[in-house]
Image 1 (tube, rainbow, N blue to C red):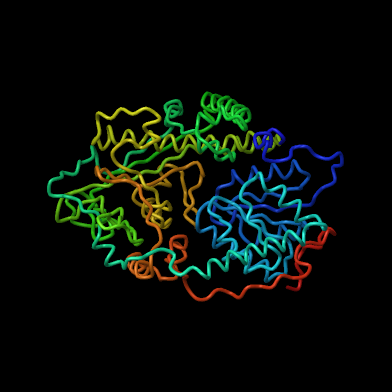
Image 2: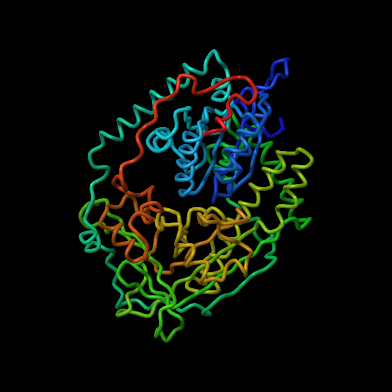
Length: 533
């Protein structure tokens, strides 16, 4: 395990004291509906190397299982992780249940979708035992050591609570988070596209095409390495990071290990890459995209519901929506593409092999490389779409740097990301692609993809198509979107929570006052809730 920790130096203290006394047990889990665990696994390794006993419950773990394990193990700390935005609601639920059941352990919050502001405003008010946002693995040890030490615990928690209250006060005092246009006004400022002088390119085929056992060797030139280093909590640019005066040596060692394993997994066929792509007749209808059954366009197969920017822009700048990049039915016969790819088929057996050998470093490394290969497959398939399958850019020739800088025509936005922030649109995507049967990728209840080494989205071909963020939306658009989706406003607000420019739903539960003894008896089992609760 120390090999995994070494790549984080000089951010953590690697030397242990002569004594090997345990600092206590930490129960960790990726919350229900979420499947991402690389960051959590790194934190677990770091904590174990600093005399914490880590009980890692894995991914997609229910609140009931997390709290039962904490009680059973006599855990001093509970850690929750999540990557996708629906996980934030699940973390609030866990905190609320911890309060209801009388838990007293401090609750650690981490993951890419989390933030100090959300932790302070939404999670901390639900639980009196202390809620701490942990930004990354390099800070986890210091936080946990202060929480389990009687000499520092109370002072540390008091500081955390004061910081939470400061953030809540800032949140309360915000007047308007961003200048908003009404939905009607935003729609009036849609992207002006001259459709009458444009002939949308017809794809080479309509329908689906599947790819099994896609050659991994073909994907190697398409790997974008910087996100790999980000997963290990390095920042910077690749390959510059390899020469960095502070972290260059550690980054170079990590890169060498990655290349060695990459050679082994490609040569040994550890993983299988699969993909499905599809092209469909489509036209814009307001802020939606109608997907037709066939080229007669006589019947609608599906609607892709889109959202429009409402933050006011300077005069002359459009309030964008993805539907703007598809021709209205009255102007031209247009098309849209879709894809789902994975490089994670077969990974579980090898992860289990490494974990059985207590080789956490290799387990984390393999997951990180599988993620990179999935992204590389998405990049390669998009290139082939542009040059071959849709064929609107047959003469395109870009090197790796050009691909990373997206110096090509067309985009491939993904549900759950800034231009298309609603994860539930993956349900329509999966139906169009027959994705689970064709690729083996399934969706969780929160619309996370499993295996985690997977990428999905839509293809847009128009020359003016580009990436953007919808940003914050107002109540009128939420209500309009909910009606178009056939869901309640409350349900729409739950899925769109990160982009709401207003306080959603009914008032929250009152803030819970901290207990005098909230954080921490040291006797084994003393942190368990009362059985009568």
